[in-house]
Amino acid sequence: MIQSKSLGSRLSRLLIMFALILITFMSLAPIVNTIMVSVSSSTAVNAGRVYFFPVELNFSSYGQILNDTKFWKAFLISVERVVLGGAINMILTILMAYPLSRSVTQFRSRNTYMWIIVFTMLFSGGIVPWYMVISNLGLINSIWALVLPGAVPVFNVILLMNFFKGIPKELEEAAFIDGASPLKILLNIFIPISMPSLATIMLFVIVGHWNNFFDGIILINDSSKIPLQTYLQRLSLTRDQMQNLSVEQLQQFNKISNTTLNSAKILVSMIPILLIYPFLQRYLIHGIVLGAVKE
Image 1 (spheres, rainbow, N blue to C red):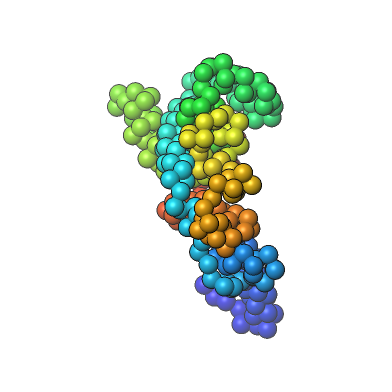
Image 2 (cartoon, rainbow, N blue to C red; image 1 turned 135 degrees about the horizontal axis):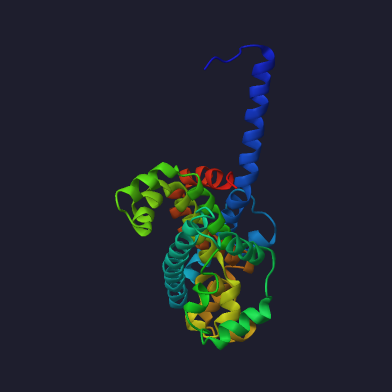
């Protein structure tokens, strides 16, 4: 690639580099500040003296979280939710996107189903009917209440459907001539070719299940069955709980504040996603673009 060496081109490249550095700093600054707050003393945090370096290094907030057996139980419930809910989401998304990607001659009711899908994206029944349906099905206080209501993510169906449409028809026709059934064509041709789009959808599903805390608050009444994000919302000690603490526990609690504790919560909940994202990131943009340009 030939680059211009004129003063104007150099100046433009410097401006672009400066803009990128500024955007990077603005993106990372909140995360760095959160890390520093979580490992600083409550006195320094409450005084507003913590910015991008720790003040009076203190890891008591992490100790309070990680030494709690309820934390690990909630963590395992969230892992179970991601694995179970993610598997259900991916299976139903693939099985729904494949027939919808076929032409009207192959699937006569395709347009009717598409209108139904689009309608569910634009309109919702409301939170009260949503809760009543789940309650009447006997799903309250179970893991199924967290994974079944959102079993078919419509946006992901449309994304994958558009990707399937971009696969050359000749591949399907050749497999059909060789005697392959529609299910075999899906498993042996469409899914292997669609890995970028599937990885993108998988990332959406994992993040969605892991970060969702609202349904745990509404649908789970048993504190031993709540997922991690719901548990973190309830983690702050109340006055009644503090009265039952020992002197040593009170001294430990006084070393932290709600701000440092909340910062630790945020970082702990980010770790699994930060570990998964690098493996799927290279598919993200590619999958979104290829799945969004078709009609």
